[in-house]
Length: 132
Image (tube, rainbow, N blue to C red; front, side, top):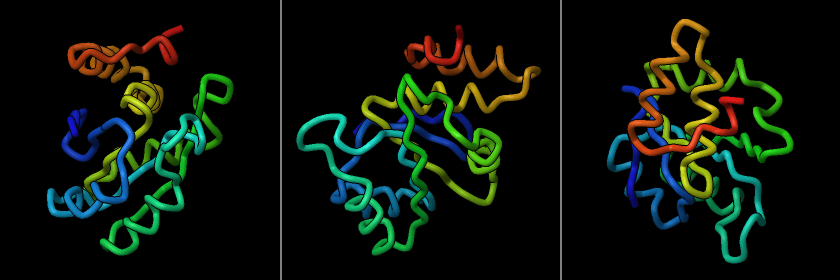
């Protein structure tokens, strides 16, 4: 599973499975953030399944599902605090990682926005959700 590092404390990835969680914990991740609503696609692991695996691995699991209709979600400030928490190693996931990258850019202060856009675009993320 490709993992894309956006900052020292935040990485993003495509949909994970419960079987991925022990490997993520072994890689040093302490927190998993789900940015994908349940049931977007058949066979997708549910938030409950991922949360149970995170609990078993001693990791924090945070639900912050968004889609194009409710982007950027209800608590962008809280999400920014989590993304910037240097005491955590956060992995955010969605279908492809793109939604997570858009959320990260949306959480950036105006002075940091251009740099974050450049970082995400250099990886190959489409930022059309946040750059409107």
